[in-house]
Amino acid sequence: MADKFSAVSDSGPIIHLSEIDATKAFNIFKELVIPDEVSREIRNLRIPSIRIIQLDQKHKDITKFLAVSYNLDLGEAEAISLCMQENIKILFTDDLEARTIAKHYKLEVHGTIGILVKSFRAGIFAEKEVTSKLELLRTKSSLFLTKDLLDWSIKQIKEYSRRKR
Image: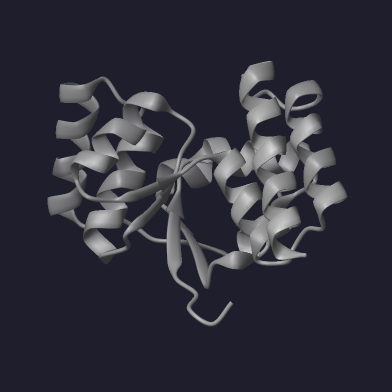
């Protein structure tokens, strides 16, 4: 992948990909950055090459505004604020409200499934491996995933594989 970018994540995708042993999916990005609160939330996980960045006072104030105004958890609010502070345009979150707010601030948002699909398209996972990881999300992960969404995701992967042949 020629053009690699940095991304900010809240704890959700990091936890869910850890639960299914798929953190190498983050390798599609140049750097994975997290704020302090997310670091605390994932402190028991051993994820290589995550950079922790502290928020400046202005962005701590923005975090408070986001958390109070939109009822976001602190980790999600800090992750959105960190994107603003560091001018990073990609945010990883599985939280619906955080996704909505992030899009309002013109951030490109991906959840756990999107990260897996992107990593498959980048060649990090083979079709069978990524399909297996998606199945594990439903059976082993704490991520709530409907059967319809899982089936749709697997269908997208198979269609992409057919087009690439």
